Structures are given as C-alpha cells and as structure tokens.
Image (cartoon, rainbow, N blue to C red):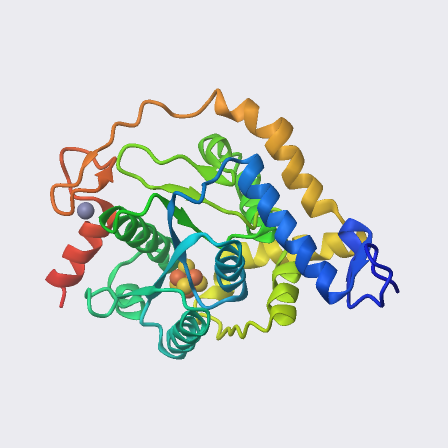
Amino acid sequence: MKCKRCKAPAVVALPSHNTAFCKECYLIFFARQVERAIHTQKMFSKDDRLLVAISGGKDSLAISWQLKQFGYNVTGLHLDLGIGESSLVARTISERFCNQFDIPLEVVEFASEGLAIPAVRDTVKRPICSVCGQLKRHFFNKMAVEGGYTVLITGHNMDDEVARLFSNVMAWDATYLAGQGPVLPGEHGFVRKVKPLYTLSEFETANLCFLAGIEYGYHPCPYSKKASFTIYKNLLNQLEEIQPGRKRSFYQKFLEHGRPHFQHTEDKTTVLHPCPQCGFPTSSCNDEPCGACRIREYMRQTK
Ligand code: SF4
Ligand code: ZN
C-alpha cells in the first residue's frame, strides 16, 4: 500500500476516504481537515483567546496539539470529576501533556466544589450522565466567561457527532436537531463553543496522537457502560464496517440538508435570566437558581 500523496510506503489506511498516507502526509491530511473546519465554519481567528476542554483523551489532546502547532493562543481546562482511578489517570495525562507542549492548564476539582461525581450520584436521584453533563457545561462556560476567553473548544469528533445525531433522530427531538452542529454561537451569557474535529473520526485522532508522539490515556468511567451514546457508537461502527463512509455522509448530509428544516422549528420562546446564585444564564422558572446551583445546594443540604 502506497501513500496517495507522495507514493512512499503508507502507514495509515483510511477506507472511508478511500485513501492511505505515510506519516508526514497523514500529519498534513489531519492539519488540513482541522484548518478547513476552522475556516469554512468561521470558528475563530488568531486574535481569539481559546480555552480548550482537555479531558486527557486522544481527541482533546489532538486538537490542543494541532492548535498549538498552528500558533493559536491556547489554554487548557481540565475538569477533575473525582471519579477514582478514571479521574486520576485523566488528570495526570492532561497535566503531563500540557507541561510537555507548553500549554497553560487550568484545573477545576469537583471534589473541592462539593460535587465529586460519585457523591452526586449517590445523592441526586437522576441519571448520573445527565447530571454530570450539566455540571461540566456549567463549569466550561463559567471558566471561559470569567477567564475572558472568547471561544471554548471541545474535542468532539465525527463519531461523537454522529452518535448524538442518531440519538436525536431516534427521539425526533426537533430542538436538539436544530441546535446540533460544529459551532454554537456565543450569546446571552454563553461563550461561543466550537468543535474543530467534527470531520475527523476517533480512529483518525488516535492515529494523529500515535504519529505525533502524544501519549494519551483512558481509564473508562465506571458509569459509561450504560451511556446510550456508547451503545449508539457500537451500532454505528458495525454499520461503518459494512459500508465505509456511511457515518461521514450521514452527518454531512444532515448539516447540508437536514438541519435547515429543523432550524425553522427552533424554540425561540425560552426566556433566559441570570441565575440568582451564580449569575450565569438559566431558563429555570420563577427566578430559581440554575441546574448546577440547585445540585450544589442539594448536595450541601444532604451532607
Ligand atoms: Fe460523566 Fe457519564 Fe461521562 Fe462518566 S460516563 S464522565 S458520569 S458523563
Ligand atoms: Zn447558578
């Protein structure tokens, strides 16, 4: 197998693109995919202060590395969820990576906030992934706004986006379908959020890390097995094996043809107001605190 660009021996085959690359050409391919995503979706410029959510997994490390290589002004943000070995591994890798590649890193410890996820799980009687996601979104936004960052970057890749799309289609959730995409505009107290890896698969970011010498780690969250996204990803991977390229075309066609239909149905009636406790926007009724503040309050009361 030869590299499609330079004809040297290939080290990576990409069946969904019907191509293969040597190491150097693969790094160029990856950089161009990210560059194209940033420019076609008008995600940010060199004048922006970028905060990258770094989990310690391959995607967040790959995008941080690539943006640093491009010369963007990048700072990392790691949320230490306090989930035993899983969080320990994630934090150690995030800190080591940022040290190695000279990226400043901010860390929020959920345990210090009284919000360690295992304790929240034992106390709040709701599906833990939904609560965990709500808290993560709250802290990402809070840290970005308070730190004066103009854009929050996440490492969501194509597989994440396809699984989310599949889940939204399964539920025919018009509001989520209208809002799904690689750029979420910054408005009403929310920082702009972007996903520059939305055209690259998990396999492709894993290859980037391997070829660029980025050490990433993963100790699965003990609560992840029941997460519906994990189930959808496995199903979609089975489909991809039989029909290479199907996941990519499903998502791209949604962005081109599907999403515009749902955007007419977008809910413009939700009224946001500042949370009386933290000041960040919330749609809670009757001047109630936001979801994150209510969880924090509940944890305090049941201590
Ligand atoms: Fe949080 Fe669920 Fe992910 Fe674990 S699997 S980190 S609980 S969202
Ligand atoms: Zn609040």
